[in-house]
Image (cartoon, rainbow, N blue to C red; front, side):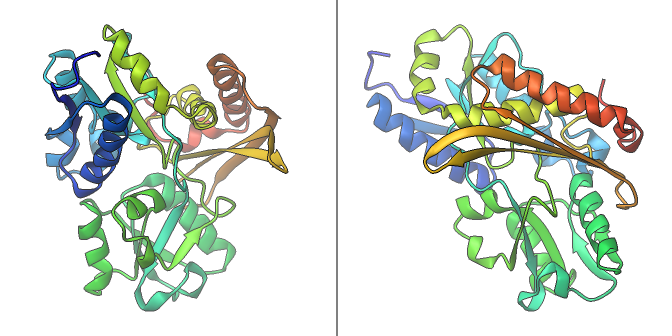
Length: 321
């Protein structure tokens, strides 16, 4: 890490969102190390496949090519959306840093500035996520209405275009993605976690390097946010214990609860549901802020066990073994 002239090679997907968030990390690493950082664009299977994520499995489809490039020495480190990472971390790769997450919530982008409650009966809402389908349909049921969830793929521009062209009444996206590309003002409603729990790890980034590159891993670790790491570790532990992939209808969010400026506890909420919203299992647990990754993992496993006892396994379709 003493060479200040040779650029560090940061592997990233080619999408506008991936380039934006990788560019932000590149700036932070450059300030940290004094070394230039160059972006190396890599195409993943998830980028080229036109199948819905639920069909291609979801798990790892956006990260495998980046990880292959890391292990081949073609890049020095990679930036992922944490929710895309498989829950099992390979021994030969180090999850060197999880920076402070941005808003983990989902947002609605609807025609005519409408909120979810204002959408007409039979409204067509685009999302490629079984998790969102389950919770949106359940929410509509509580309002005594029916919606049609329409599977969609594509980048943010493509998804927003469905609404702009009048093909859909609304789409649901991650607030973090819209924020990172500077388009959060287009959201017509932030979906509170009480209504729609986000995906495990949503809003957080993962910075990964080869486990053998200890000096780089130590440097990147300075970008780590311990509270974010504790929260997403608990969320991903829940997902892993449910034996569900990242395309399963599972939502999870760990909140840090504070008294004044002092963080005192962490609350972990989890939900599993059928995509038609007819059946949900939703539970939560609260405890001390985990002091280690082992404690965060245990918190997720405990809540998952309770959810499985309540019948969660039967709501997820084919489980990821």
